[in-house]
Length: 612
Ligand SMILES: Cc1cc2nc3c(=O)[nH]c(=O)nc-3n(C[C@H](O)[C@H](O)[C@H](O)COP(=O)(O)OP(=O)(O)OC[C@H]3O[C@@H](n4cnc5c(N)ncnc54)[C@H](O)[C@@H]3O)c2cc1C
Picture 1 (cartoon, helix red, strand yellow):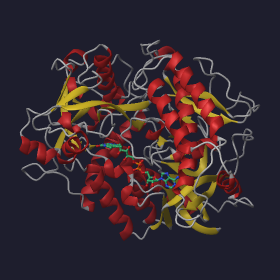
Picture 2 (picture 1 turned 120 degrees about the vertical axis):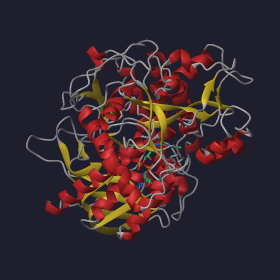
Picture 3 (picture 1 turned 60 degrees about the vertical axis):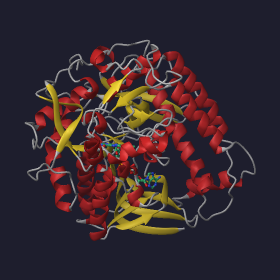
Picture 4 (picture 1 turned 30 degrees about the horizontal axis):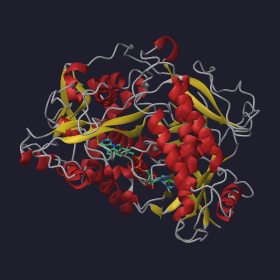
């Protein structure tokens, strides 16, 4: 086992991790640990754009952007955080431009901007051009640009290193923290893929920037590697996860595959049609139609299919029509995604509409932080030295439904803030001692899994998890479907405890890694389902058919999910008791998901009915 020491260790080399690393490395010794080579991170797959109220093409201002974000998130957004994000958006775009990012330009040479769902002028009057973009490769350009800058700043990269544990001074799953004691982070444990060796990274500050968890679903736009690692690591040590029941389903996944066709297709004029050729969004969102927020469009599509107006031999998808657009315009603005339609479905978007259906896309929930990126261990206390930013985190700027292009913005604004906070904290903090055997838990876990001669197959358990999540916890949910998902997960958790891997070797053992990632997925899926059962209302991305209305009286609050060992007292700082369904007890000896709440920060915008 090797030990390393850095002032700041950042876990994840996507947009959030590298934006944090840029700030941190300018101030102190910084390492970035990433399970992927940095430029393979999912940020590089982002297509459509990053928004900021530059007002380059049409009149716009950050206040409208804040309002749209709050309304888009169905009022579960923390408004202080949304205001910061909208105000700092303009600098975030200009920072990237100065670093050399090749944004598309207007004929006058300014950064061009296009329309995206839910972004409006003057509080909903009409759609506004707010998304800055580089064709449909915006994320790719952001990732390459940030990586170049990090290399210039001599950030120490540890690539193809998997962080498998977070070292905290307290294990919060087993007992409450006595009054007056601080919980602090002292480092992480990582597994080196090439050699199978373990590494302990001692740090004053740790930033989690590990991205999303889309692989809890079968049909998803997310890469194979988005397994919720950072969320699960924090959760397993007893830190809460916030608002996990809110998962975004993007309207336009390629039907049957889930591969994403960016909302930019509709921003550039694409229209959704049912089997009768009807522009059905006119019925659901008369003002902004196809550019309504994603939760509304995804539900409308699913509803068209349920009511028998779906297209195709099985009537199970709708059509994205680009045929009225000039092919030269399509080639200039949407080159990659139209190529996806040709490659994966054999459809020519110039002349044929593209079959699409909602696909699991984005985790609104995650590790709770304040606006400085500090991780919370309950509603009020922070964990000293621990930060999170990007999709792994919940700050909460997206509330119950994120607007398109607000994530590339989030990773830049809050990645930067977390990087600055982490470096400044490290400058003043003293080193926290590591425990005597910091990697003991990881060693035991790896050996057990590798040494088990036979058992359950990883691929079987994962497939069944993804299947039950697709069937029971997707766009439409009921108490019955969610209880089914919960029961299935309990059975799968038990089977997981008997999982074995075929590859018993040390070098490049991806088999072993997939087994570990499956454990993360199971834990994350459980928090999604328990949160969704508890929330007996419909809001943003979470739609309960048995409770189709938003219920501000009972549920205008964030959900906090805590893992606790069986028998640990429940009257903890977890917040108030859950109000919804009684959650069935987990399997014997398994930790419980304990729910609490956290107040929503409302500054200016009082909740209204959401109409578009
Ligand atoms: C297809 C697609 C298109 C999108 N288009 C847009 C768009 O146009 N506009 C927009 O705003 N948003 C878009 N999004 C959403 C947005 O891209 C993501 O939410 C955002 O890029 C996430 O960035 P991140 O830095 O948090 O995570 P990621 O970019 O996913 O990076 C995660 C990093 O964590 C590392 N990591 C994970 N686990 C571990 C571990 N255990 N140990 C070590 N390292 C680990 C990975 O190696 C990786 O470097 C899109 C998403 C998808 C999937």
